[in-house]
Length: 252
Image 1 (cartoon, rainbow, N blue to C red):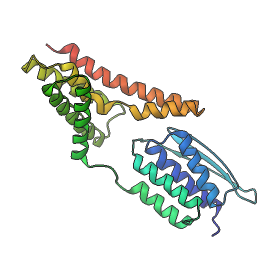
Image 2 (image 1 turned 120 degrees about the horizontal axis):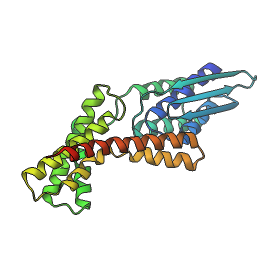
Image 3 (image 1 turned 60 degrees about the vertical axis):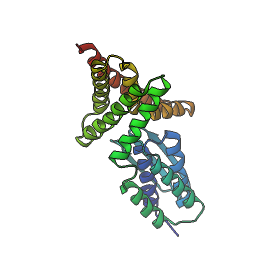
Image 4 (image 1 turned 180 degrees about the vertical axis):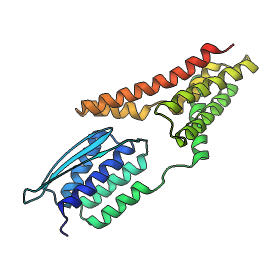
């Protein structure tokens, strides 16, 4: 099936945008885009991805060139979507699907709502916080407090993200929430360690994926993306820390 150069660029830039929006590292985005474009018939492909945008230039067998860029404003972590785009690129490269099917599947991946609903994600966050507190030698009371803190922090993050707050807002208020719960539980029961509760409560906010992607990008030679992701992770950590510090500083 013959695919127009404009169609090749359209499907390739869409795949790159979906992967960037959902937390894929730069090298994976560029490699997947290159595979998709060549599988559709492009002879030469040059793609460049940074956390806030993706750029693509493709040329066909007649030497015609088409370029496109796509700005990425909002980013999250959704490994399911990344895996689906990767699988689609493999199927397209192997000839198991054609352009029309691949483009339809990509649009569906970009629109679909994946992941867990609010309550299961809150419970999962609570389990993470509780587990971390146990690793810090917390007793049953501290572990329960960490569960409640992480559970509540996840709900606060959901509410603020629904209100489209500024970046790092829910990390800041999440840190404050975890610290308030820890201080309050310690106030009503002095035998509870507030430090273990606070540490467990802020665990859902730790930018582990961002740090991992930053390191991978730097190792792969994508210094611009690696440094920008590292700075984003550092600012996230500062926002969480400031929320905790403010509460601990003003407590009676």
